[in-house]
Image 1 (cartoon, rainbow, N blue to C red):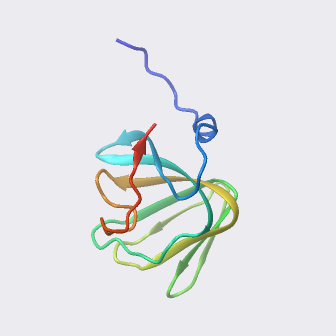
Image 2 (cartoon, one colour):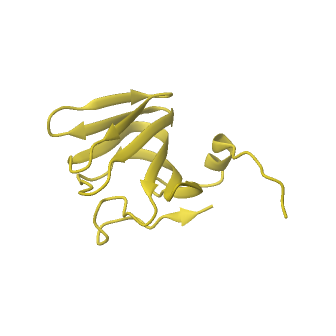
Length: 119
């Protein structure tokens, strides 16, 4: 049996490159805890059955929504309510912690989702 160990998010972020490719770093009550590096604009999408949790670790993120944008800086979080169309974007590289129910596609649609990979 191995001893429990803390997960260092900043260290994990150094282990991968590429944008908009979430990496699973843990699980919590049936949810995937994921790290992702983002830059540029993602795509407009919604999640019909789940909220979408964003926590900015480093950088700045804009979550565009049809009724107005939410600006997030390091240390800030926002939950997009289920069913609300949104499009995250970052002018410069941004590091984010995402929480999503296990198995839920990151775009809300299996056909357009990016595969989640465990680290």
